[in-house]
Length: 332
Image (cartoon, rainbow, N blue to C red; front, top):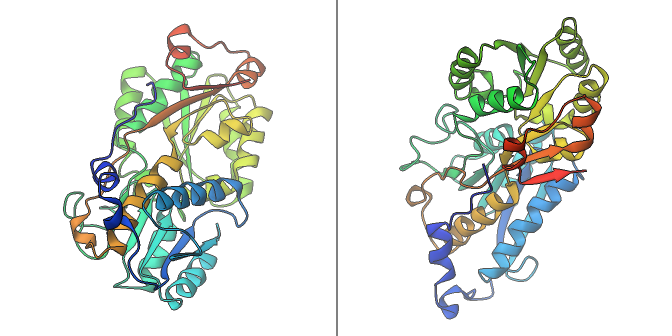
């Protein structure tokens, strides 16, 4: 589970282009829209934007000089729709999206402007693409999880909390992609639950108050655990989720590192900044005349396991040596 670094074929190919070919031709200012499915002003979203800008600069595109990036962010579904329409009205040559709802909002706003998504778990199930190798249409991008990760999350919660017997899968139906609702992750979670002897509970939450109820229900008897699924709702309610996990002393596994940085127990997922760097290579190709249909959907190749040692101690747990050896980052 060590962080696995793979060289992206397309990224490395772009890096090998001669500098004259990579330099911007002409004086026309090119335009890129970016819609983040995150709270406006969120520092993580800004980090992703910076990673995208840095990679574009390496490819000859400088924001404010030969390219302009129109950045918008919101975790509200209606807000995403209005911002998507706003971005398209600005006449971008492509739009980069983060999360499934943001991608869907832009897709509804345009049927022709190229869309590059990041953090979409099930692009086929959502109808964004026809297949990974041949996306078709005007949408392609980078998936953020694999189907087997559902089982991996269960294995990790049992490894760090061996007494766990029941695990709730926390997700919001309104913002969850097909994977969180049962399409991509659930089969591997069910398979792992059978092998591990864990009772798996699908726990939809429709508003913040139901988060409290979900944790309270798991605390009614010993052996409860929880897995937080990746979607806009859980990201927006990060503080509440982490707080309730601490209050009810429920071992909880998260899909993203920033939950652990905020006090969560453990996360296993990908480095999104790496995905935005890869997205820049696709944006570069589109700006130079490349077609979306020639850009296959790419699956993640760089994963990270993060553990919060302070939270481990607060829950009265210990980090097994075998798990510690695989940890990419240990937050004290």
